[in-house]
Image (cartoon, rainbow, N blue to C red; front, top):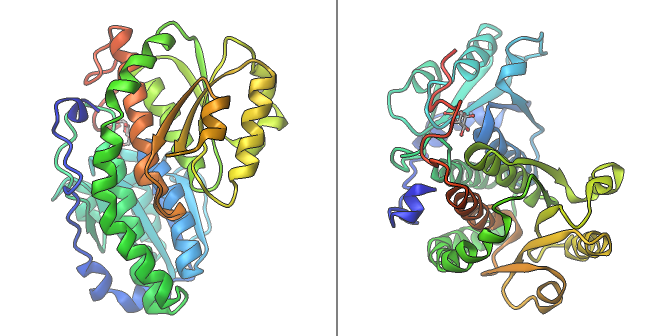
Length: 346
Ligand code: F1P
């Protein structure tokens, strides 16, 4: 986040090597299942990875908190591929989850940022995300790097397996190359986000909503706000709102909702109408030109259109900036949040 603010974000920074996929193609393609283990932000990236891998490769994917997985007695098969995602590469729970899976014969694929880290060394193979060190404690650009690697991995495997039609493969690859420029466009929204963030300096609670690929983005937005501004925030799938969280909505409750164009757009729109009917304050992340939501929401952040499966790469950025600016307004040290460690090694 602070990288963004210091102009150090470089949308071209994620240079990924997928030699691991080429070298271990057979093992990856005969996986009966992928199990993604991770913590925090990396776990949210894993939820996006699940949607990408299941839709492009038709391989079942489970996403587990490493901190739970390691302490229960999970069913692990020798044809499972366990994917461990970690920015620092030192998270003790993720490392322990790897050791457990390894002892039961699973193949381990690591997605790490720090070259030569403990997790990278414990895996059978993997990809580095190469986004450079996170300056602050809270993961931000690592999230983008992790989602990018997972996208490339799913594309490569889907193509090899034949489950991703060639035309679709080329469509996604072409759009992926347009993402850095679109990220630059998103970053231009920074002054606007900084400006309206002031309205939320004294908020006590926040709700974040999204559906499909946007649901893990909502979770990540809520986590960033909690981590650096110490405001209580919860993320939910937007459709779950009516199963409980809707009771929380009143004029005091800001709701951040990712409502970019997708097959679920109309449903998300009706979720926004439900929130406004209860006087909730809505910050909507929308596709540019969306006048319908612009007229409904209190603040709407307009982003360039992209494919639904690549949307998290774009939509996570305004949520990171929102958390950053609210935290700054509250006088918090965004690089060194209280009680948080860069690597959780115990
Ligand atoms: C996981 C994590 C981060 C979070 C904080 C504490 O770390 O939960 O997502 O922002 O730094 O640790 P990692 O395994 O991805 O390094």
